[in-house]
Amino acid sequence: MESEEFGVNPKFHVVLLPNNDLGMLKRWLKSQLGEGLEFKVRLFSSVFGVKYRKIYIRFQKTKWASCSEKGNLSFNLMLMALPEELRDYIIIHEVAHLKFQKHSRAFWKLVREYYPDYMRARRGLREYWR
Image (cartoon, rainbow, N blue to C red; front, side, top):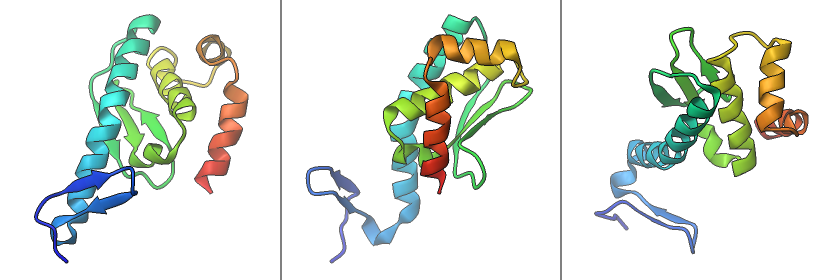
């Protein structure tokens, strides 16, 4: 049965895709993830006193997120599969890179200040990556 309209029914865990258009699903997932990411990136950028250029959401094969030297933040679309608290850790981690490029003591001190249980989050992310 072909559906003419894209739709998501969270109650029944059903996604309706017209003509099985997976690109439409990917765009929808990006928009859903992007709303929360943008708000939190703006929030932590303001708190840390840093600026970012752009936020990208991509399907990355090797990492959850990254921060470029130019101040661009890239987040893996697979963050959709993570609990919100792990997404928060990733956002804080990447925004902290806007202040400290390297994983220095100052970097980890900043991360710990806003996400005290960051070591547990790192372990959790390794489990989800599998």
